[in-house]
Length: 329
Image 1 (spheres, one colour):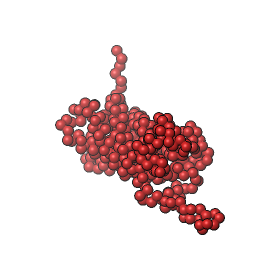
Image 2 (cartoon, helix red, strand yellow):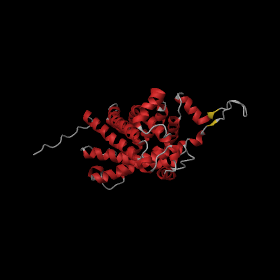
Image 3 (cartoon, rainbow, N blue to C red):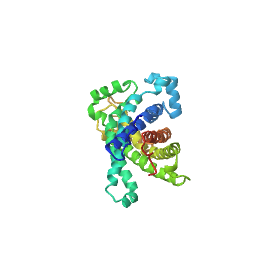
């Protein structure tokens, strides 16, 4: 008779490693599946005249109406950028969930049991922010390649040729030019993603006739998905301006600093020379505050769905290996 699998001890190194693996499943797979929406979202931010919205953008690419710009057609055209998306968000997911669980446990031990409950929002926020700062260092170069191949399809086919090409042309600094705005996008997003999820899950469980421990795994996973989806809507709204900036920064082909790129994108470039004279260069128009919100609709749909699926995948993985479902204690 086969021996029963050894139970994973909570808060042991094996537990944190298991959570990291769950993060790969949660983020890498779900982001990879959402590549078509991400593709049209990035182009709605950077090429709004060609891609005015999510549905229109999918139609444009699928029909082949944008092949003259270097985009593909059909399902393969909609999968543009899937490799850097899958690898980048797999790396990010491992660090995000693994370190979140580690920091949540570690920071919680700084408090008494009563204070840990009293200040749980603060602990969750600090743990998720700490985890995301680390996770984005792993994500950033892959995000840069993803955005470049999706918004400038003539640049490269995908990760295999795009990463070495960007590294050769712009160096490591080019791959990390978007790190600060990436932190600005991802850290608030992740804090809300975890704190809002934990709070919403608690609220749902408090209103159900059964206690969490008395519910089936299927019922618990329904709560996990609902809480994740609602948290994702909030995440998408709060982090959208920084997401727009990340998309535009990684589209610009220059060796300028991240600050110079952000200033150019937001405020535009001044005119050089005089109209009618040799050497005149028209001003580059900045997007301003309103432009930071371009593509909000498709992103809220994408992030809400994505976050719900991420929490569902993470919860399903944890329960499958005998660990408690996330949320609600």
